[in-house]
Length: 244
Image (tube, rainbow, N blue to C red; front, side, top):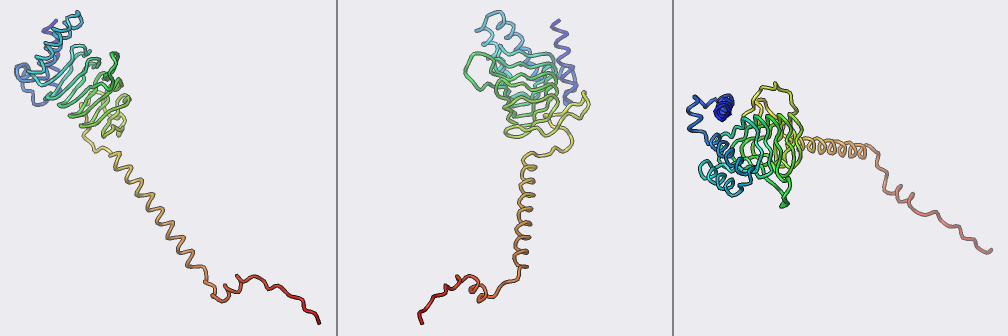
């Protein structure tokens, strides 16, 4: 059973990383795999109420790999942590099957209560380097989180999120088996900030054109002679009666 799971992990890494040349290279040189193996030992101790042993094994794994996975987290099969340095997975985080995390990713909590406070990543999610997913939110199956994005709300299935805070820039329109390195599809993505700026630019241009039209209309009205204007503005004379 353990060998089968290990073989499954290594094959999934080789399928998602073209730099992995052999089974032995992945086993010996991939800290993401080492971190997951240590996590499984720590999680086993944690679920059997050996909390101190679980935390100690987790600490050893962090020292050896640079990846911190709390033993209380729930992680599915075939997790691939590429490069890995700086990855943090909190205590109540839930990670589904076939998830890919790059270096610097944080699955963090935003509150101090003891309940669910870390995110849930459903199957097939890819999270780019430096991304922060914070709070007890859910990232839907097949979603892509771009590098350095900060996710603070639930993410629908199959979409691509970028920016701070993260905004949706693409709905799912790819094959199920397509793998997006660093959570970024190969085609150009629309920039949500650039779209907002462009919309404001168009509104300003429309206002400028309207002001020009009003000024032209004003100039086209014939000007009245000042004397005529003054006479029109004078109040009517009051007739005074005299005694003869």
